[in-house]
Length: 175
Ligand SMILES: [Zn+2]
Image (tube, rainbow, N blue to C red; front, side, top):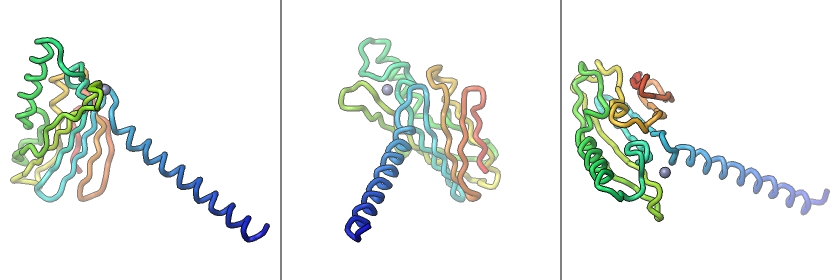
């Protein structure tokens, strides 16, 4: 094989590898993006601070996610907004840790056609007794029958852990 042909061959391989890893990345990103009935929760624990980053299709919280058309749909949105103002009623730490939540982000992100929408909801918990911190319970399941599961990624001092929460198994262990 001539040097030029070898080089051409080599760059072909690099190109192919690049294409594979890019599409794998895109897929990975997409799998967390927007699946009806499924939410994502990233929990990060650092010292006395827990950051909880919840994203979910609006559909999983309301049963619809296009712009509201009826009074009932407007009322459902108002009720959801009311819930979101009280993070402790949606995500709760075990009481012994004495954690206080603050909302960092609470917004609806819509696609350009207004067909799909996601809730981006980020809460910071500051805990007076972090050594007593054991678990977070996703209380939000009781407020909507459309949320089937929440994919949980937990990052703490001992590393990273993935789990799946459902209405029947809504508690996430924080260790
Ligand atoms: Zn959707």
